Image (cartoon, rainbow, N blue to C red; front, top):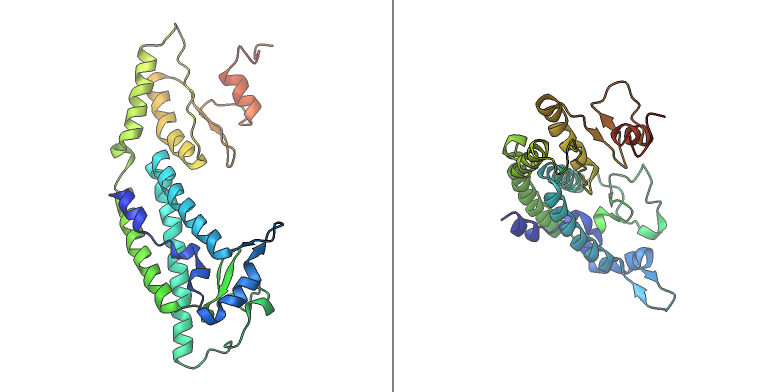
Length: 254
């Protein structure tokens, strides 16, 4: 059901060019389309379509990694959608009450990082002027995404660590290793994961439990963020953690 909901997402926040009005499309082609060395045109609208497919795959990978990571991504997506909808609503209000002053702008003639025009520009690296877009259609598809994302976030937030079956299965695996080591005294376990926030979630849920239940220490080593360990009195740089968790191969005694 979650997979079906992900497939239903428009991910409209990631495809601003899709909503540019036909009469403005050429301006944006000039701004963002890229001519390759072979002479063909790599169109921004095609890049956006590819990005949307990648985002759907990324959502599934995040869910596969941990429900915790999935919820983080869904929450960020929802915040992005809400932010764009707020901009659209402010634009509609200024247009309807006659206070909108920037009608005749060309995307090629402005500085897209301008603070003056920040309320009129939507997007990250690729930005569009809000008045150049079919905001009725964009708003409808953003609101549909909003509904789906709220549903996905509600589902994911129901899964507390106590209800996280994958986490409980990992704890059972650890417990079995402690009770039935493959060779005498070897209670070492290394857990790999693709995402730093999943690693942090696992450390938070496992480290104190492992120390209290089995008197074994844990360490967290991540590419981004801060390393941690339950072993007191040592630094948390990679070399020190490796030296203390692999003392024989690292010749800690010396």
